Image 1: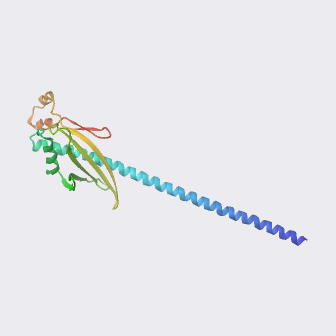
Image 2 (image 1 turned 120 degrees about the vertical axis):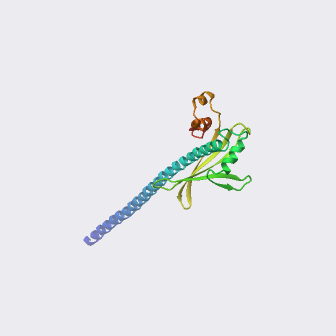
Length: 208
């Protein structure tokens, strides 16, 4: 009789140890899953932060393209057109896109699209690359063009981040009063190229 009681107690203890083992295994699996989820979330946060950083750089590159096209148009008007906007807006569009103001490439159409490409060195990181294309909008002689500027940042050999800005640039002749204030020959070209505004999709402005 006493032997039967000891056998029952031993079986009870074994059952308890079995429950503890099963519970421990379940907790281990749950903790492992939680750890995997935390690691995945941390990795996703790091990737998101890296993408946002690269996206911001790409946007700055696109803004650089807007600045670059303004400078190229200023140079064309000052050096080729004698400081005066030509009769047809298409003259400036074609002159800047096909002139000696950078490296251009053409994407087959129809219609084919010519882009002006640039790459700006940045200390300690990959260069900012950007391009722009210009199209004539509105009336053929209203001194208004549309600029599509794209900034690109290379994340890897197979992955890039791009941001695009569309801006309308309108040339406005200089104010006669302001022109009278420019009395030296050295500031004539600068005065002739003043005017107009560039407005992009974040409401930042610059002048042509």
